[in-house]
Amino acid sequence: MLTGLSGWTGGVAAEPSSGKTYVIGTDITFAPFEFQDVNGKFVGIDMDLLEAIARDQNFKYEVKPLGFNAAVQALESGQVDGVIAGMSITDERKQKFNLSEPYYDSGVVMGIKENNDSIKSYEDLKGKKVAVKTGTEGYLFAESIAAEYGFKIVPFDESSQMYDDVKTGNSVACFDDYPVLRYGVEQNNGLKIVTEMEKGGSYGFAVNKGKNQELMDKFNTGLANLKTSGEYKTILGKYLGEDSSAPVSQSRWGLVQESLPALLKGLGKTLLYTIVSLFFAFILGLIFGFMKVSRNRFLRGVATVFVDLFRGIPLIVLAFFIYFGIPQALGFTMPLFLAAILTLSLNAGAYVTEIIRGGIQSVDRGQMEAARSLGLPYRKAMMKIIIPQAIRVMIPAFINQLVITLKDTSILSAIGLVELTQSGKIIIARTFASFDIWLVVAIMYLVVITVLTKISGNLEGRVRRG
Image 1: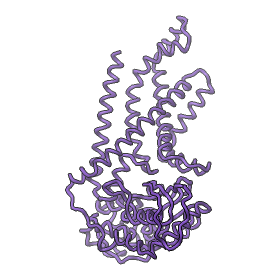
Image 2 (image 1 turned 90 degrees about the vertical axis):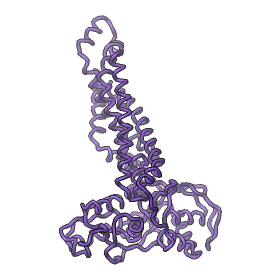
Image 3 (image 1 turned 90 degrees about the horizontal axis):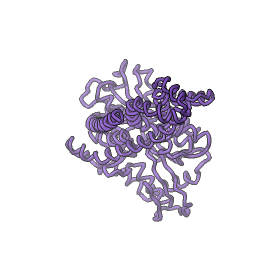
Image 4 (image 1 turned 120 degrees about the horizontal axis):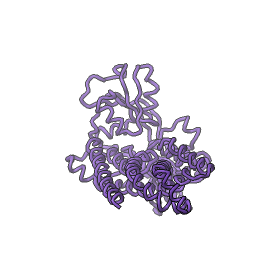
């Protein structure tokens, strides 16, 4: 979403646009504050407020959809200029960020499965599990009373996952911010609210300390103008008032049909990330693979370090390090696409290196000795005698790596990469239809991987037959 703006209606004059486009991180799985509608547009209280404030204060912005935790880390590392994601204003966050004037006063309620009549108060939670979403008012509240009422906290990154855990019976209840859980109940998420709202904190917009103060000033000024003009109240009423949208009655097949365009788009991105990453992984594998079988000890050592390093680090840790850690340490911003390609390429490159090394070393050493005894130089003997035989051995392993890398793209949804899995999460955040959407996503992965495996299998057969 990119907006820019000229229309000003507030009570305090907006400064002329500096021409800068601010990058704002958010969590688009947090309805009704931010989520994606059926047309792919980012909507919700936070999104509408941001759009109205930008119009009022004449600045441009671009929304970067991330999970809540990823958005906070992106702000810390300077990957985004600000975050609006239903972020509670706490003393701990004030130590790290500059937070705006409160734009919504929240509170916490407890939700249970809609047909559960055994849980009516906190006393009924003793010895049971309670689901919470990390970074929310609900998490802080549950943490504060867990010891008193003797229940165990089960943390999740997204509200929809928390609700599913309650509906499946793994947890008996969940604590969530009142407007979020109330909106979910109204949209038939399968839960009901059983407690009065506990007094909670307020939501605020955040920027890094010492940075983007002009953006913070614009946000506060614009927010005050919206409250004066009445537009603030209108936006809240749109999602939380009596005129807020009622749940749409839709068949399961209708939901699948409606969701397919977004899922197919996510699938296309999954294939794109896979192909581009494997291209660079293959180049890395060639370089380090030949270094590993070289006669130079130093080159073998360098290649061994590369393989051990990137094969030994879990993919999600590598993704966090590349996307959040390196930019924060060196003071620059890294595009999400680049971070994803780097992560997948380095990880797959380490495995491709071993595939190439194993393929070359699988060829009988006597063949190299025979070629050299006939007067062939080492390089020519390698290219003409060893490599053609090694490729036949490598192909099944390459096919396996292709499948692994394709599935690994789903892990990168943790840093906000919108591919097939993340597309499914976004739809579920709006519809709460976990079974139907995950079933479709699983089938799409299965079909694509089966087709690719068959194509690769045919290719392998042709190579073996010469």
